[in-house]
Image 1 (spheres, helix red, strand yellow):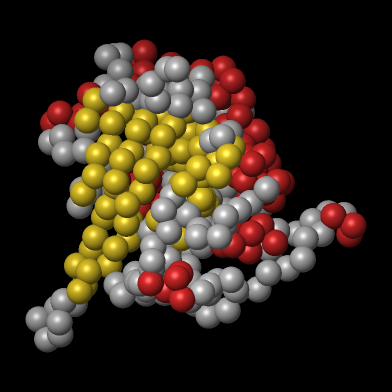
Image 2 (image 1 turned 120 degrees about the vertical axis):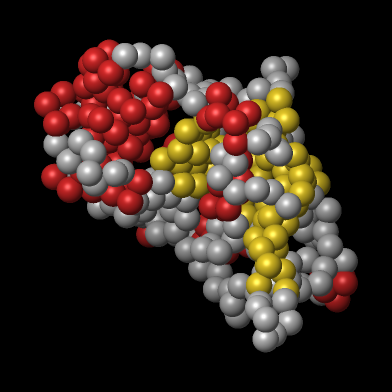
Length: 319
């Protein structure tokens, strides 16, 4: 079996809270995440807002420093590399963010924005980088003449295509896509997701696809991980997780997805309460305050993340 492109073990990220006049605490935004992404594979991460999925993406890209754990990219430990040592690796790890307008320089034409990494890291001259940028725009479905325009002259969907063109400019092996379609109209979402799929087929790039939209994740992902309160509570192949969810939280999430056919609708599972405060997480199983099946064991003992079938893992005492 080939080694994974990306391997994350025991990933933690804690943020200090409080100030001079009150007791300081710690928010455990990511609290022990294990994750792998294979070559040419798309792994989706889903969960409610605030579960830590975006923080995981930023830690993997080393946009944030981790508190504890290990990140290995192509077998190399990049967990604590300096900025200078990360520089040659960054062209292999790119990102697409939720708001493409915020990630583009409003004072640069889109052609210049795409050409900049090609000039700085790709070893091309300015002229070569400009020509390459025009070809990349054509690849993502925009006319080469669009390179002379500025970000404000495009629609949201077009700007996201520009962000994708910039992300693939250096031929990366991994792209972290953090809610790349959540700000777009439904019809445009489908176009962007199909574009990402086409690029994967052509280049064999791997994706870490972060989203709260379960329908989109099901369409694009090979494997899926479900996060809750900074931890992965279930993971498996797309079909395993969507057709046979094991964890009560995953079951509740999937029950909220609208079904197009009346006969195929799941019974809606409504969770009580709110997501606990990450600065003061509950004891035992982090989901027990909202779980309809919780017992005293769930309050006292943290469940192990165990394999329930080949390639399908979940953390629950009663699976």
